[in-house]
Every structure is written in structure tokens, then in C-alpha cells.
Image (cartoon, rainbow, N blue to C red; front, top):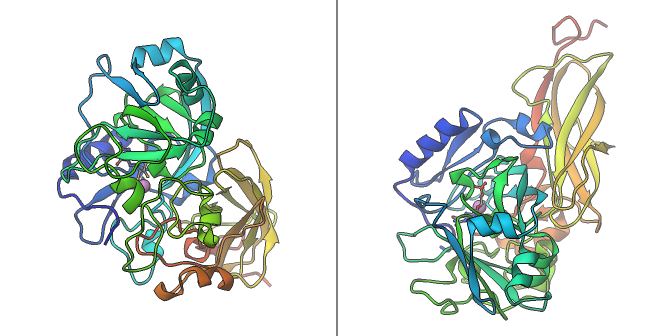
Amino acid sequence: MATERPRKTRHGEIAEILRVKDGGVRETRDEADKYTVVGAARRRTFANWLTPIEEHFVCHRNDIPAIDAEAWTVSLTGQLAGAVSVAALKEEFPRVAVAHTMECAGNGRGQHRPETGSVQWGFEAAATAIWTGAPVSSILRANGVTAPSDGWLTAIGGDLSDDGDVFARSIPLSKAFDDCILAYEMNGEPLPREHGYPVRLVVPGWYGVNNVKWVEELRVMDSMVTEGSLDRSGEHAFWQQVAYRIHPRGVDPDANESVETVDTWEQLEGAVDHPYTFDGNVKSVIGTPDGENAVTPRDGAVEVRGVAWAGDDAVERVEVSTDGGRSWSDAELFGPEYAGAWRLFRYDWRAEPGRHALLSRATDDRGRRQPATISEPDDWRDALDEDAYPWNEGGYAANAYEPNGVEVTVLDSDGGSRTEG
Ligand SMILES: Nc1nc2c(c(=O)[nH]1)N[C@H]1C(S)=C(S)[C@@H](COP(=O)(O)O)O[C@H]1N2
Ligand SMILES: [Mo]
């Protein structure tokens, strides 16, 4: 099965990340208990726009490379020439900041039935940070590629794999020129090791996997990375052409040099045979009430608050249901509005004492709404007509709303769970 490869030796590293992050994240294991990563520990992370570093999930396959930042350079290859040091990145290029909602393409994988392999994420692998660094467009212009063409930029991580694969991911030059950066700071702090120190690619609004950490090479070619297209040994295209492709059970996707659209949803609707996980699908999560604590209405109301995002697209609308999906009301969008980052939403719920099932569902500005559920394995693309997300073997890019709902107990103003009549 072509998904994410399990590793056996992460436990020491994870313990260290949990120590550094001090309780804001928790371990999530894969079904075979071999692969461990960390995700947001609490639903309340999704009640805020900015995710503190301590609460930002972490996901990667190999060990974090040992790095001497002074000696680290990013080599520029293919249609580019030369190299850029970390010092040069900071001194010779404009310093910019971007907001980016990063979601692991495997977020929601744990909601697939039957189970898929690999890390069983619920909704905890999504976060928003402010990333500071140099615009990729400036680096490209200074080194031989002066305008976006139909070409592709491939970023390669300096992490070493047990399996001989190279962590290489490609994005179209149009996106690279538009808003991508090589980041050296996260939320105003030096980039933490686990998030890609000393330098990572940030691709605003695109699934986590595109945001290559520990970048050691940027390569411009006419095509995305395919087997044999890099000047190095090892397997080149596993992460681009095999893993992180959305496909039904038992399928080995064909490699492509290029695709018609990088909009993940458009690919799913039929534009590409086995879609790549590029820009994020529309999705939302309620942050409060968090379901862990009973709530007491104030003046009869409880604020339902959460976040909604839509990759390269904008969130147009968020609806909230407090009766398990029987009826829906519009929430209000508020707070920062940056391309590639989520929006906050809020809804004043006239809450009656008792137990209630809360759901949220978002619609993007192209009219695409989160589906209710994840389909049966055999439905594949037909699922989209039935308000379901296609079950897929890697468990990628799932954005169904029902599995992300929260059960809430409302108390009366005396702290009991019955109305006073
Ligand atoms: N070099 C490298 N970059 C990587 C990965 C990796 O395994 N190696 N994992 C990717 C995946 S799958 C995700 S979801 C994001 C997670 O970024 P974070 O750990 O900073 O949250 O990093 C991406 N970048
Ligand atoms: Mo991921």
C-alpha cells in the first residue's frame, strides 16, 4: 500500500519534542504503533487564530537532521545556478512574513472506515502560524528564473531516509512566485528544529507535505519531480508521485510531469486521475465549547467559536448546527483575513440545558461546501454527489464535517443541567 512509510525509531525524538512543547501537543500513533507524530492536544487550539508554537502539530518521516546553520546552504539547480547560505537569505533578500494555515494531508485519516494505514489523525493536525523569511520569487529572480512559466519548483529536504528515498516535493512556479517563502522564523522566533531549522519552504494554504523542512536544494525544471530527474542517488519521486496521491484501494497512481490544475478539489472532481494533495480543501473545526467542560449560558447564550479555511480559496460562509445537523444557522466570520490562512467564526447559541451535538460546515468562495461524511471505499468519486468525501487508500485530504463535531453539556445558570421551568 502506497502511503506513508512507518518508522520504528522516533520515540526518543518525540519525547524531546513533547518536552520542548510542554504539553501543548500530544502523541498520535499509527495503527501498527510504529510511527509517532504530535498533534494539537486540545480542541481549544481551534478557538484562536494564531497557533502558538507549543500547540503546532509536528509531522515528518525521518529523523530531524543534525544541522550547523552557519555551514548550511541551499543549492540552486536545474534552471537555477549557484547556492544561497542562510546568512545570505537573511541579508540579501527582502524580509517578509506570511500567514499560513498548514494542515497535514493525512488530517482526518483516522475518520476513514475501514481504517487506512499510517497515522490516525482526527482533526488535530492543522495550525496557523506567521512565518518570516525571504520570498521565493526574489531568490528565483536573482538566480536565473525571472518569471513564472509553466515550470515547477522542486524543494528537497536534508533529512535522510532509511529507505533510500529523497524527500522532494514540487510546486508550480506560478505558486512559487505568487506567495511562497523560504522561512527562517516562526511566530517571530527562530525556526524550531522540528519545524525545519534552519530553513523551510512555506506554501501558504497548501497541505503540509508541500512545505519542505530542512531545505537543502531548490531545483527548477519543466516538470515536477519524476523518478530519475534529480542529480543524486536514491528514489526521487516517492513523495510526489506515489505517496500523497488520492486514490481508491489497490491502485498505483501513474506519475505525471504536469497537471491541468493544482486545486485539490477540482482534481477530485475529475480533472486529474489520482489527485495530488496541493491546496487545502475547505474545512472547519469548532474550538469552543470544547466538549470537555460543561458550559453555562450567559444571558441565555453560549458563544460557539472556531476556525474555517479553504486553501488558496477564501471561506465564504460557515454554518453551525446545534442539533446534530437537523438545522443550520449562519455563523459570523471575524478577525484577520489573509490569503492562505483560516478565518475565525462565531455564533451566539441560545442554549437550553442538556446534551447537544454541535457541528460546523464551511463553504468556499467557489461554492464548494464540506461534505457530511466519508464514503464507503468503493464509492470513489461518486461519493461527491452524495454529500460524502471519497474514502481513499491513503486517507488524504478528508474534509467531512460530521466526524469533527463536538458533544456539549449545557448547565442552567445555577449550574444544574435542568431548566427551572
Ligand atoms: N524534509 C521534510 N519536510 C517535511 C516533511 C518531511 O518528512 N521531511 N513532512 C511534511 C509533512 S507530511 C507535513 S504535514 C509538514 C508538517 O510540518 P510541521 O511539522 O512544521 O507542522 O511538514 C512537511 N515537510
Ligand atoms: Mo503530513
